[in-house]
Image (cartoon, rainbow, N blue to C red; front, side, top):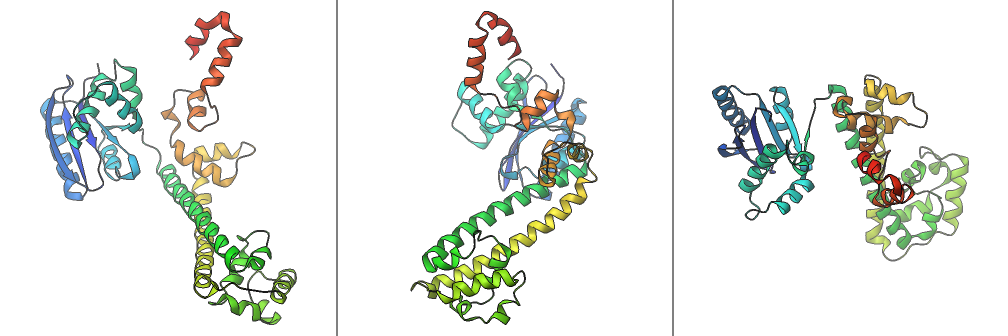
Length: 337
């Protein structure tokens, strides 16, 4: 069994519960820290005191759900401690198999320490703890920025769907004027006036002033103007549509700005450069993969990496089919699994 000072942290949004145990699994102390600089200093003061007392390396296991572990997780790594991520689902499974008292932060912190103690002997405990190896700064930036980009894309789709639904109720002919409401020229046209009804009265010269509207789209707009109608809801729903169109345009600008940053960072990332040599990978997917992978040293081999990125999916059905085809070699199949 590896001899180390073990620290378990049950992460909360405003405060964290900490438990410290020696190599035998005996709990040395438990305490709460606030999610603040003062709380982090208190955490390291206590852990360092125990480390110097026992002359042992430190390993910290903590949950990372919803990002509440930041920035403590990075501070732990900078301190030179080993960091393990606690898989929440497998922790819950572990508590089902080894039931205890009702859920409380102290109980969860102790369960994390139990996982630490049993990980060398129990596959379930080992699977629940994954060591977080430090990645390069550029890949950390790629991860955070690409996740931010994904959130903005999801928000854009949500606002766009809402806007299209409102347009369908207020002026279906206006929505039908474009095959894609996410077209930049159409969004700029929608947000050109605060009152949607004024769009039906714009002159050709004014329409051509809208960025992205050339001769072709000006004709599309004029054709809609000749038959433009609005429901009674336009008085109060119209401003919502205009506001949503402006929001989608703003999200377009934010996403484009992040794309430029991701392209610059990808040029500095060894993993991103490798991915760029593979046909079929676009700039966004390269940046996201490089950021999420972080460091190749996390993986034991190619199969482990392929499974992590979802390029080697396994299902129960596939396993059973494989076993049926090779019924005479069931022992070999089980060994491979």
